[in-house]
Amino acid sequence: MLPKPARDRASGEPARLAKSLLLGLVLLLAAARQPDASQDLPVIRSARSLVAEWALVNRVTAERRVTDTYATVMRRQLRRKLTKQWRALSDPASPAGQAIATCLHLPDDAASAVLQAQSQRLLAIEARLEAA
Amino acid sequence: MKLLELTLGIMTAVGGFVDLSELVFAAQAGSRFGYALIWVFAFSTIGIMVFGEMSGRVAAIAKQPVFNLMRHRLGLTLGLITLVASLISNLITCAAEIGGAALILQLLTGAPYIVVAIASTIVLAGSIWILPFKWIERTYGLLGLFMIVFAVALVAGDPPWPRLAHGLVPQVPAGLSGKELLAYGYFAVAIVSAVMFPYETYFYSSGGIEEKWGPKDLAINRLTTIVGFALGSLLAIAILANGANLFGPLHVDPQMPGTVALQVALPLGRTGLLLALLGMLFAISGAGVETCLSNAYSLAQFFGWEWGRYKKPWQAPRFTLAWLAVFALALAIVMTGIEPIELVNYAVLFSILVLPFTYLPLLLLAGDRTYMGDHANGRLSRVFGWTYYVVIVVAAVAALPLFLLTSGGQA
Image 1 (cartoon, rainbow over the protein chains, first blue to last red):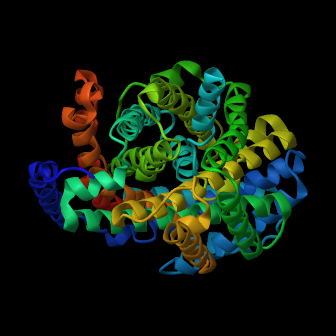
Image 2: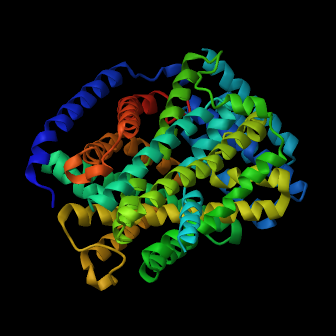
Image 3: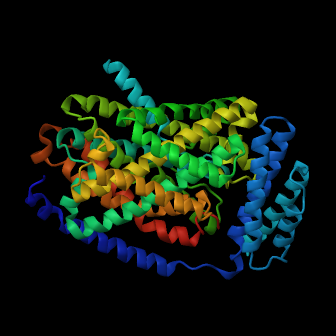
């Protein structure tokens, strides 16, 4: 066990630190706000990457660089996550929603180039939203 | 024998360095910002070396694990707040690691996610029950060395080495928009948090006590933390560089651990993929065990229970129940269906908020000659320790606003 004086000597510092941290946090949070125009941006960014990942999985599968089990499970996981992102959009009928829906209607082993094209489409939408 | 101990210690530190959060943040950081965040990995690695060495030295000399210090140095109220925050942070991390291990097992076997999640939790719990502490650490650490395949893939991928080396220079990339700058800031903070996760020092110092370290072990402690963590960090940097080299041009910001394994499949094919998945499985599982035990250590040390894996499970019943409960809770979180990657984001956020309270008592005691005698912090340790402490406090203050402003780095 440590003797008491050690605690007394240092106990004021952490309390002051905690107060400063809390104050800093409140000030920074007050400055934090989410612009409406880019509300869907994180979802679109994530969906764009998921479609690009799917394209890459299908490319390496065609090149026989991965196992069949890996390809099957990855495609299933990607489709599930992509569906989740589509549902998270504020307007699933928006251009981004349409691009994601197009991908979801494709077969698991869709051509890599087709998926890559949809990823590029989402990337363009993402760039427009970022610039807004 | 000493040389064997040292080699095993270093290899264990290397294999055990990377966990799910580092895998994800390193690969995404490389894909989004090229090589520009390598310096943050290098910088934070020196930080974990400093605090890791300190926690090992305090364990060897003052015989005090981190949470015992916390209660004495922070007082009961602040100590309790830190304990609760650490428990939450470790629990979320443990759940993320179990979920991550299940995802990898699924890629290897094709079995349903819930089944492999339950199976991997049982195997992890079984390994803690059966293996002595040293072999828990070594088993996962040494098997995690399969991760070296990521470094091999980097060399095989022939990246632009001068640009990669330039990534070691602290920088903010030119031409980023305001939003991208915020995302860059969030990634920097997340990497600091992922590399310096508090559970690493809880586990490391508790391990020192478990293994009954004394002054004669200080050299091994220093070499393990410096050489082991440095080599481990090189693996994380290899994942980042592979992300920049292979994923960036394809606009892939890996959303799943399985995608990270493609870094190896692209240059090395199926064998590389299998080695990468195995390395990831053992590294992530090892982190799952460490976070689970860290929670049990924290609780037992804070409340003064019997603890330690050198005792039979029934000789430290509350400690045993604690780690079993952590695994059960972590599995319950996984069963809700929440994505492990989402959990990683929350774990990183919680952990950076806890870091200042974890490292302050350690820093104070390691510098206190009353307890540490001649082994108290020297000038170099003091300068490094307090400099990193200031960085951690700044990162902790900035973490939550950056998380909200960037939607966890996605905006």
